[in-house]
Amino acid sequence: MKPGENEKAGPITDFLVKDHKRLEGLLQSAVAHAGSVDQETYDQFRAGLLRHIGMEEKILLPAGQRLRGGEPLSIAAKLRLDHGAIASLLMPPPSAAVIATIRAVLKVHNIIEEGPGGLYETCDELAASEAAQLLAKLQAAPELAVLPCSDSPAVMPAVQRALERAGYDFHKE
Image (cartoon, rainbow, N blue to C red; front, top):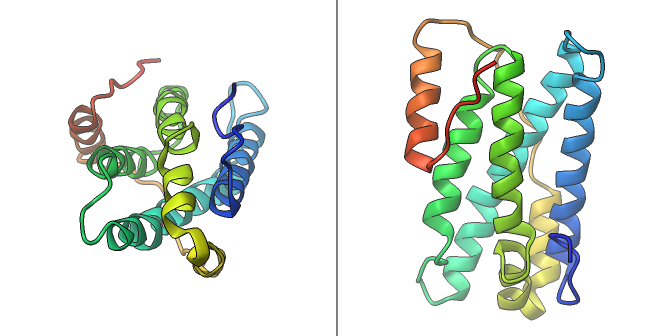
């Protein structure tokens, strides 16, 4: 069974899995020509991924905690570390190593969210009759203005620290 393809998929799962697929399509398009990156498409990917992370951090995880009587979801801490690592990877210019690392992190991270018993299914189950309202909040999340990539010498050490905290390695070129 593929992640996100389970019989318990509800409206939250459907919406967020489709967004994962949309984002993967943008990344694929941005790097479709070997040796170059379509910066405009990559910037759309970056803005979309940061919006997606924001939906999870500002809407979904707090709703899950509220619906559990104030107790955070067991996977919330891991997801937050992953989100920090992913966001850090969107700071430097998109080298082959950065793209490979983004893909490696998302491969693991998306399973935690999409898979059976993952974040999305759990939130669909917890929300039950509130699922439609929660979905509407997710759909209404604002688009983000994103700063340009930075090649500042401070960026890559920050990326490395964020990856290490989340348990990932940087994929060298």
